[in-house]
Image 1 (tube, rainbow, N blue to C red):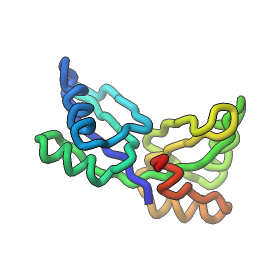
Image 2 (cartoon, rainbow, N blue to C red):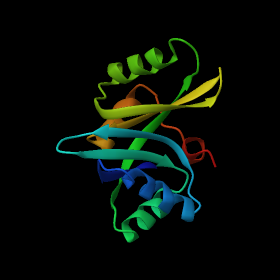
Image 3 (spheres, rainbow, N blue to C red):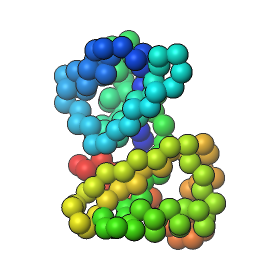
Image 4 (tube, rainbow, N blue to C red):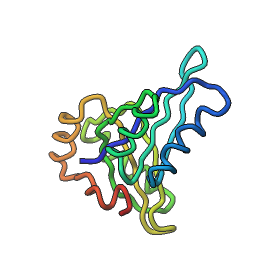
Length: 143
């Protein structure tokens, strides 16, 4: 089961660097990320890291507001239309997601789509019905 680390950050100089500093000190590698501005000067930083549980613990110990969220990660072809193909499958399965982001695993060959859903168990059931299965943790985290 794969996780992303979500951090609630105030939009001020140095706050993002505080996160990366904690991860660096703990030997945690960022594999992919999104940073979204919300309201009133705050944002959500979603990180795909190689050690999510350890990252969450280290960030919380440093006083940051951090949480683990279960995600679904799917492999796709790294070519024009690769993302469209996987999105069509997810739509066919009825999966709605809160946010999504990607990462190239091997240029011109393989990529990864990370999907953050509201109801993980329901989404897993939906994709299983069409025989679309999330990738294992080793593929997701790149260990």
